[in-house]
Image (tube, helix red, strand yellow):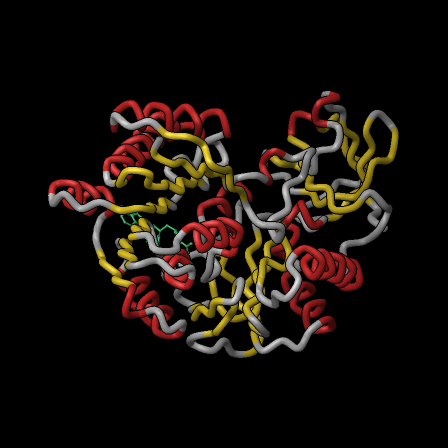
Length: 388
Ligand code: SAH
């Protein structure tokens, strides 16, 4: 068990949160250093063990309510439990986010499973320092062909972590094949965006697939075509997909061929805002539009500019809908809370001069569990609207 101690005090409302902020620490015992594990005491009562980072505002990330070390057997235990949860929540699926940080009791650590290829992201110093243990634990648990780290993102900066990516173990295939809800997809774990594939929208894709039959579909911000392919498999008459990335569009074409729906799918490389305006000027109309933009609000300071971008792209999409048409509008910005998203959509509908009913709401799938005590673990929200 950890030898060093951290004493904290915090508001009742934050009592079960996995993060302890720097201003909640009252004193340390044993001089914990960067990445050290510590026992945490709240008003002299032991509450669990955490990882210490003196360079981060998140001073301690709690990883266990028990008094235990963060070693290979601990990581293996966490991985086993997370895997079991996925087996139960996603029967028949083999490819998913295997570990989702704090929600799976492994603060700051994300692991996506692509068959026997694994991609790791570390958001926190303590797990970053222990990536060799993570690889060892994975290898004890599964037959592992490769482990790749994709640690080249902005959120590592406040933890004082360098941005880097590369192979930690084995050799990734250039194109790994995965399956999701009965569709197949190629994933480039080395050069793809984020970890290669966006598992978080699994449930939204099922909804789109169920709504697509006989409809002309527009998939905006389509990446490698996951929504487009599911819509086509659901019986869409035609799918036009738009993304700014040429490599994503090329992979999307391969994915449509893989699923035998390429004759009904068209992948355009363009800026979404420009493309939607042009489609409107051409008088084109769609029966279902899927909007899955990148996070326009990455931090609170982006809020106003981000809200304008969401509103603009949603207004454009709403104008393109045929009578009775459906808009599936998502946001992956943590800071765009449900009420904000709803109000943004109300504004967009006013600008588009359209009325809608709310058919449904969407959120991240069960391989991205949301912790009740940690609002930060929820980031994916969406509404399914139908022209009234
Ligand atoms: N819907 C996708 C994920 C979308 S991620 C899926 O389920 O897999 C956001 C996508 O938006 C990325 O592929 C990125 O290339 C694209 N993108 C970002 N800005 C864009 C813009 N202005 N116009 C078009 N595409 C854009």
